[in-house]
Length: 261
Image 1: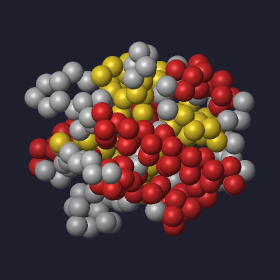
Image 2: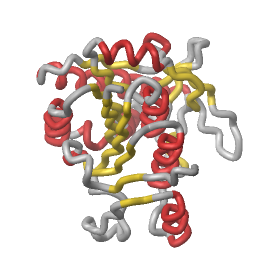
Image 3: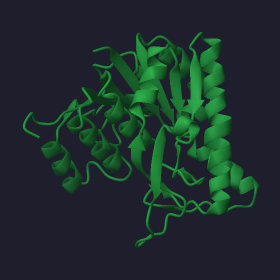
Image 4: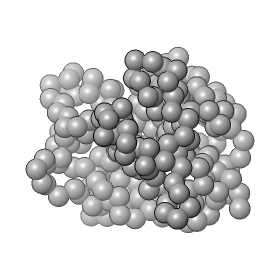
């Protein structure tokens, strides 16, 4: 089975010129099949402010009303996605920018309103892995924006970590997939004040203990939950590392699950 590397990078990395340039150069050097998933939240917040639209967040998740949906569609599916695609094309990488609506590759259901009404936010229900695998086998490098659709004509804001995990799980039927979540730190830290306190290996038991102690908190919790779920669904390897370390997959935090899980 051919190998595939799926990289998810946070918005801060693709929104700043220097870090984006470095990321694209490193990504272009990855051998074999590859996919890039990106965020863009800071740019969305900045554009919303210029348009007089309030940004509201709950537990790190964006409340997406109709006005904010227009903003994130412009930023994620337009500005950020196409800057990444153009940058990769300049490096000889035949990139194709996609939202979930393009070729119907990823459908979601609008998240029901509960204690919090997140608005037009999607929970992934279906991934057309065969279509993505066909593109990839033809030498195309998908660049996935954090937007999906419901099949009824509505776009939905969808967490980029979830996009990456769901795409990786679906593609695991066609490739041996390495999933890398990349951000500003070298990995999951035992002490957030010490950038060198990387936890080298993390399994579900260690994760639970770290959450109970408060060592792991906030947005890292759903990121790791996505990582464990991806491994259980057939993804070969999951790594959390710094964006400029994507050429060194043996570094960072290696996520594992027990063989019996």
